[in-house]
Length: 213
Length: 213
Image (cartoon, rainbow over all chains, first blue to last red; front, side, top):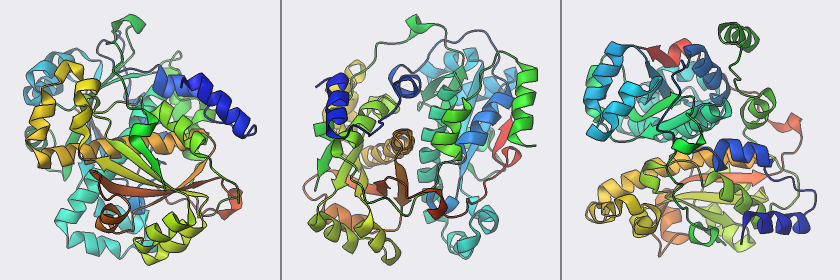
């Protein structure tokens, strides 16, 4: 069944259901690809900030919002980061207009009295449970990373996510002195035309990923 | 600094930078809230499928796409699910038009030869490492959950995410016989007007979440 068939079926089923606007769907998901090559053009901090100002409103458990961002821009910063990347990712980091380390703040509970006033006592629960705290930080940062990737694409940026790096190396070096734990590294920039992407890898079909009870 | 100031600054800095379309930003993030009450109106499987058909294209590590969905719709299914929810969430599950259990497939590697043909040997690496596999499944499912929440909102739906439940209880009951592990439970429906939401909780400011090197 193609997506056109599906849209037709949906329209027949419930003519007033809107579904996802095709342009939004294409821009954020269907036409967007992991980008490996970027234009030689700056990505200002102010633009990443604008994206964050939007995506920070996405929901997290207990409004913990543990996502933190290290923007790696200077030649010195890039060189330090590259030493912690796997070999295949080093050149990518050195060549990208901007690289963003997505990190989980394991000390997010320090902000809970302000962020979660209706459940401020949970700050003490988390303070006494470093392992549960680290897990909550990681899980909710991954969730926020999903919002962030969508937000960067919504701003017209291309994103190249990388999992191949030494997290402890980044944490002990670039994130030293913080409770931040690196989870994901994103190259960010203006995509260098549609011809430079890999062919799109397939995805699973609905019947393989969903069940109804 | 307000967002209008920021948008002005951004426009001054780089007049051709697009930023995020205000309507998209409002619909997906700024105006969207965690929804607790829904209209008495069905959310057909076909609509959730349409959303998944879009958000499944979001990137995951090695194209592992481990997100799985259990759509809980029947009175029997709801009643079973409710027994595993924390007390404050039981009525919500029984009252929502649709509840979706977001699960991570710890056996995602069984699809890797099809999904990740350029690195099919990694299926064997994951097969030999159940702990690493479970972690990769969890991390990437949380990332995909971020795409899913945005996609449901893009279709006009309201989402009420819940973390208060017994994951092992759900896994041993509703997900028995699968490698699926429940991470998050979402109530999904058509929002019952703008007046029924909680006041929006605050978020951290840019200087609290970001650093540049």
